[in-house]
Image 1 (cartoon, rainbow, N blue to C red):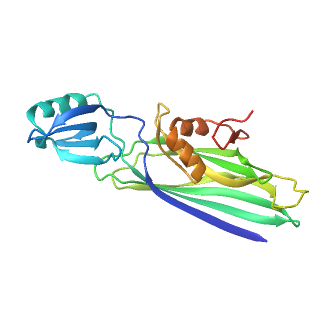
Image 2 (spheres, one colour):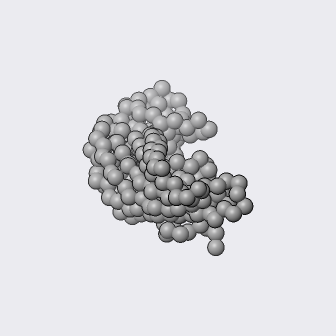
Image 3 (cartoon, helix red, strand yellow):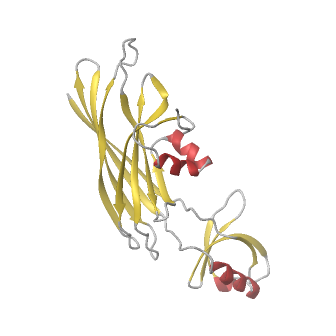
Length: 243
């Protein structure tokens, strides 16, 4: 008995590794505003408002008073190149074949689709990798790195995309949930996709696991730590390596 189950997950996502300077500026009417300066593109200022409901905005530099225009231009000189957002779509294929009554052979692979959402800014060439995780039904609180598959992503022109077929791994596991004689084995559970620049900074990342996503949202460094693990490594639900 064979089955193929593709899992499609799509998201608009790009995690920036740089935070812009927070400065006080005034608009042309003299109203003060604290902003996080993200980029200066021509005469357009891209900034985020500070506070609990931070939001990105684009405003012409002439909308600020003269002193603020000078401050913005000076601060912008030290800003790194702006990295645009990506539309990331991952399709995971899981082929299963029964062996005996409970044992299952599983083959996993993925297709990654990327699209640059910016109409003006190219997305740089990156080193990408998918880390596949598995879980043993006898011990579901631990993730095992089943395989790590690196691949190159060429630079994406504005509004352009690319696709990549990514190899996965093969595994076998006991599908009996209740039997005392369960012999174990790791079944595919989730993945982590990372895109990094030449210096190793993560420009974007995406995972199919809600628990992993929640931990990374609290501590962005976890994405890099996970992406550096080798096949066979075990981590707990807090993404700490298990010895």
